[in-house]
Image (cartoon, rainbow, N blue to C red; front, side, top):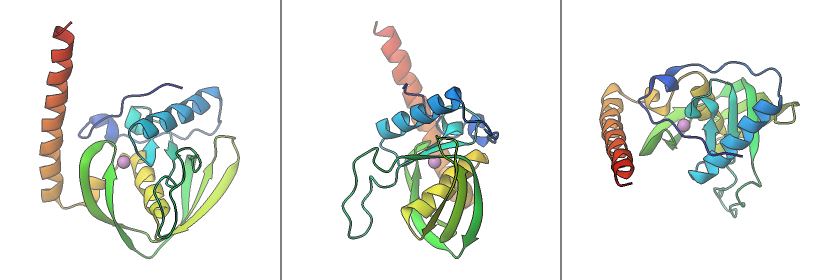
Length: 188
Ligand code: NI
């Protein structure tokens, strides 16, 4: 496994759509493993391939690390699964949740999405499966990550004003990170 760099919005690569995988081969399984490792390293619950610059319809997810109401959180890895070529079969009702994104560090905003969903997908073993979720982190996360495969981010669900404020903060963050990187290089 290897860590991959997570792209920070705004980045034109995050606006591009993923391509269908169709055949889960060794390259796709490697991507699955790298996405999982990168997601855990960044303390995320979901990560889509376009966020690491790979335009394929692959998502790593583990929402069980966060405790559901009245439950203990599970250890990292216990709830890990992958959604390859996901299709939303059912989307009903509404549910509002405060979302963040690994490509938009430290920004959190309320987003309203479907409450009840049924998603069909291929798992890492190549088998077609289904999951159902209602008004939970899982129902939110599946829709958030599937957005990434369409070149869409949670800020696209916000008002233009909120999106512009976040865009400015992200540009500043990227400039700072770039300066730090250059500083490190010259410190050698
Ligand atoms: Ni995201």
